[in-house]
Image (cartoon, rainbow, N blue to C red; front, side, top):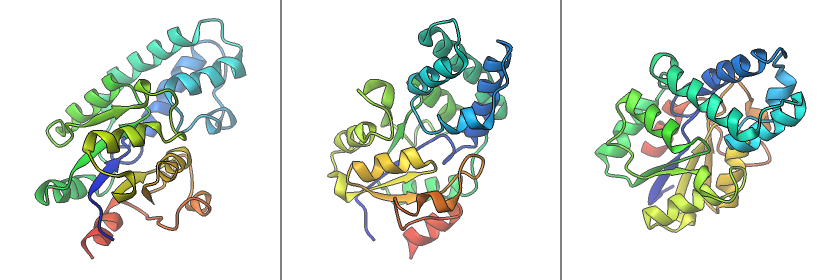
Length: 216
């Protein structure tokens, strides 16, 4: 397969931040006297922060507004990113490959621009990704295709000529809805390979396998 551009998700794909998000969400919920359950978290993985916070707000009948809770959660993450977030297996290698081969690329994330910027800065990847698209700028977050379509637009590439790489079911659905080819690298902290069976035939164990496929 030949692609004119690659659009990367970030959390859970390039970095192990899904487990860090879980820590921050747990702190936020438990600070209010509730237990953050796997059942509650299963409803929100891969959604935009305001959208998943609205679900948690309803699930736990929280008294603060969704906006207040989103700000608190993002602030917690900004403190945790420099000390707890690290690259996923194969991330450094695939990014080196796209840079060496001058492959146009972008980030398409449900996280806020501040979270994207902080994560890339913590990993030293600021110069690799000059195109950073946040679903905060769109009407809907993933699984809607909006942020992926925005990334293709900013890259100047037809979505059908783009590869989108995702770790979550909601993200993968967004890639497919945008008309891109989807490579899935399931983050086993919150999902499994079987859940992608009806979304994409391209499912990998890690980014090392994705890179080998691109090089083949």
